[in-house]
Length: 254
Image (tube, rainbow, N blue to C red; front, side, top):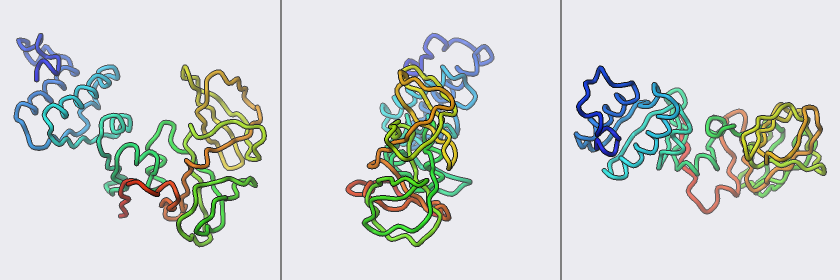
């Protein structure tokens, strides 16, 4: 365990000579020596620096795999949850919202809270009105027709929201869904582009080589097969074709 946690050179040192980062590693090692049936870790990396946190995410995952023990890991850091978990339980004020694999929770959020919490940037929302009929494959958003996954249930007229992940937006001058560039964040190979629409600002993740200037008007093309629909009132996801043929994680309602 000491070797796995890279503590072997430090075994002769006293605790008061160790950094916070190392003490955190020691505490995890002490727990592992006990060979518990279940590890319960409550934000173990919250007080350590970013570089050490990245190292420990890998080491903790390796520790869990080697000992083949269940690990319950509490965190407010969605990056830790997405990169370390086999299954994620998303909670809001103590109420369980959804349980599923990272892929299930990301691709098919059970409600608006999960959709807005998981992802960086999180899912965008564009409001629209009216009901939905089972079998519908198109909605009207800001005067533009948008293709969506086939709806699997009837929804009475109500305020609705279209959910779009930033990577599922591309710029297309032919699109009737329009906006103006508000700002950009360069990330190396990609950039996050904030676009001001009549329904508010949404963010797109696009290739960095696309040249954009604040105020430029753009058309927004959405990947129809990857869109989500939500009831604004309850926040729940509307069942569509994206939920077919696979487990999408269990939704929980308080």
